[in-house]
Image (tube, rainbow, N blue to C red; front, side, top):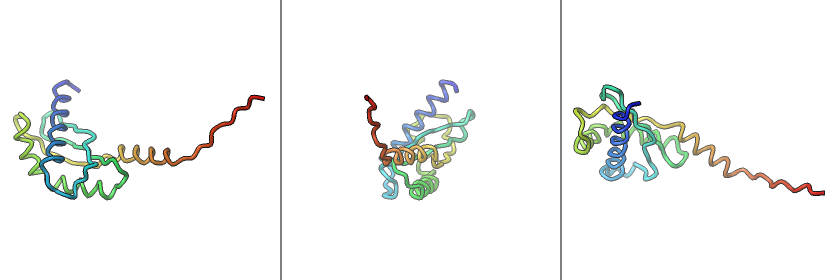
Length: 122
């Protein structure tokens, strides 16, 4: 991936995070929400935004993705004010299942009770 796309992805991710956390006044959006990845197409027409939560609640994550998708018009309007681009891409919000799986695995590992090995110094 070229530096141009990496810069565009990181700038869009930064701006989207700011818009969602600070400018959207929707109480259904969790403070545990974060954007795990932003991937813009080479023609800058489409942008895939992966959304994740810090907790393992798949239903809540899907609800948040639906809210964000319905708010795309407002988010794009705010993004135009923040980003200098010829045109703002169409945003496609999707749930980041990989992050959810990682959180679930960490929860399982924390709850394991592994007995300590005894020293066999005889």
